[in-house]
Image 1 (cartoon, rainbow, N blue to C red):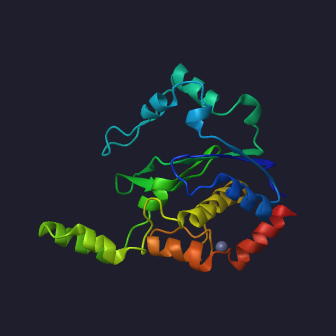
Image 2 (tube, helix red, strand yellow; image 1 turned 90 degrees about the vertical axis):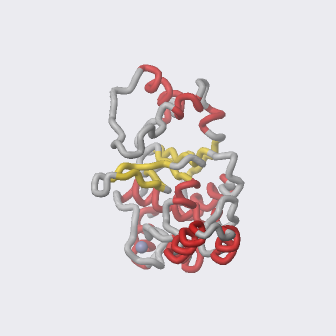
Image 3 (cartoon, protein in one colour; image 1 turned 45 degrees about the vertical axis):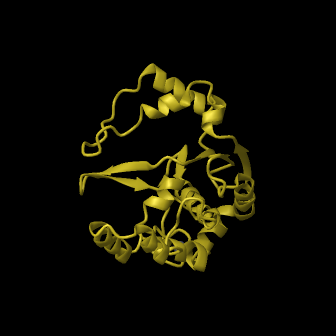
Length: 233
Ligand SMILES: [Zn+2]
């Protein structure tokens, strides 16, 4: 049985490929669950959201993000995002954003862009989907060598067009579904990812793999179809 009784999806109006109602139908069909769509948090929040989000900016990308005691304002901001009566554990809130979400990695002491920050509430970053999985190695090499010669960068981009996602890419619509599946599997089972490339739960580090898992294959592997079956009984 699903832990979740209802999912709330929050729009990011600057990304037309999200199509919130279509995603709601997709989730209802797969998980047989209630889904409510909402406007973006910046429209819902009573306070000045932009200013508050700006306060979370990474000021120094070299230095690890330091946790600090939240101020009264920050707590009020959290409260203004999700009303108290909707913070129950069986209600899953998923926000879409065009901002790049990052986490700090202590192994290489760097920030890494992330497409998905799984928790409740969780965040799916469209910029993260475009920027976090790497583009082909050859593309970077050509770009760097041509930049050194002041050659036409646009012609290199043209050569690799289609091999990776770009802003306003129509393929984003379908790819976003895969990240939603990963978030819900994480919330339900504690495991968001699969090691099989043909599964939509595959944690792609390369754009090529992301396009393969979500578009060419576009399904869950046998194991995860079974997990899903048990979840929705
Ligand atoms: Zn799988």
